[in-house]
Image (cartoon, rainbow, N blue to C red; front, side, top):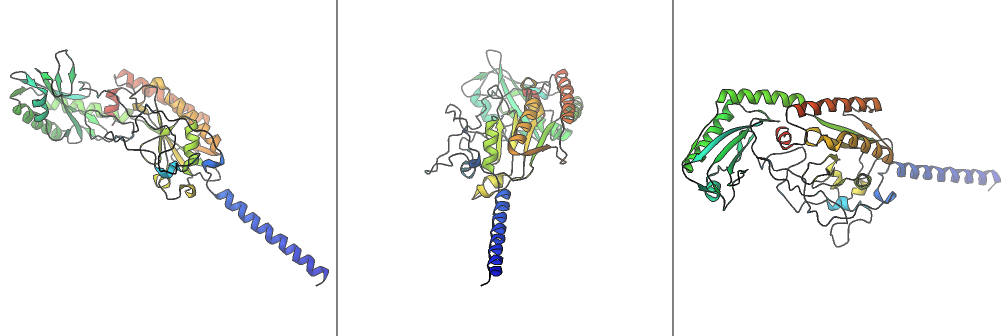
Length: 380
């Protein structure tokens, strides 16, 4: 073999090696980033917090929320598939890793309020027991699309949901005037009357109903106000180059204070007060979180959400949303955009913040301050 042939063979080998190395580099660059690439310790588990979704039980225990309302299912946990993506992976025995989770909301269920409810006084002939009231309650706590509730007046002068062992001289039934399903209409008001009258008849009680036309008009006015002042704000964080694995997202979100929610692909930033709705939520494709091999699941975007009317103004939720979005974008090499995919500049965020302050003022003036029980019920 001549020197020329040997030289060409060596050059060919080098070119082939270079092609193989380049393909390997491209493959590595396009692979999802995983939590193991940047190990950081996650917050230690708080053993005093029960594991469950932050939910709220308003007048209607079946109402659905943007932050899902669960019936206190204490078995909800971070999916094992997502847990395997966290630093150290999932324990071999199948138990959950050391990870903070969304605590159970123990807030007392808010009572009927003339501001947002139609209320009908129910007066029994004699004092009735809480057991009798519970037995007389209708099978469902809904009137059309609106929550229905009954309360009893205690000897201490407090209204409360009926309790076994308690005794009541006065009761009241109510239905919510409006929610995100719309205003109370004539048919729903009539259903409320029928349901309340049947309840009162079982207890041999007298009931007084307000005038339907006035209440339906009030419902429409409240619904119009709610429609003009409802706000659910969301930022999308998109990957610039390499995609992310679910564990990589969870790891970086945990560094910003997020804890795992009860649903796959959801994390929340808890409020400062017990029982308060989450300040922010972070969501991504739940299928990726539950995949057989989540390390190979590629996420190219996640969503940061703020339910404006559910979070008290004092939490400065938009400031937190803005700071978290920018911090995650820097840490994960992403860009913050709106739903249309347009990058959000500082000026755009300033304008959004100013609009939110005006919204908070309007809610305060109507006694429906953001984060209040009344606001959380109305905007549900």
